[in-house]
Image (cartoon, rainbow, N blue to C red; front, side, top):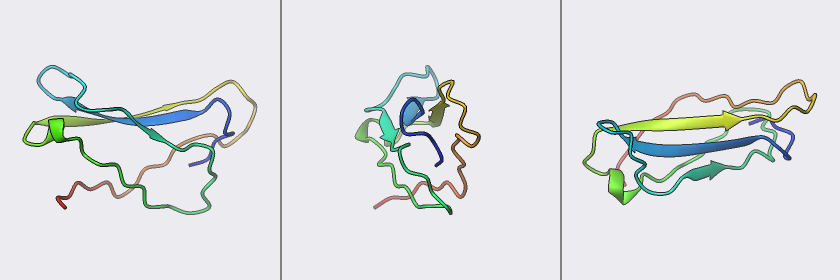
Length: 82
């Protein structure tokens, strides 16, 4: 994560693949943090998505501030049961 902490936002949503209906709540990612390395972020799968064929939507929105490095880098995504 690398954002200015003011206008940059990121969220994760779970969508049913057949009709793109949102399953559960939207999960915000704290974009006020500047990570120097990859950090583990866990997003719980909502109960409504269990047993469904789903899309995981990751959405990053930036503002027009002149900061040179705003962005979100994602690596090693996995889904596991607890």
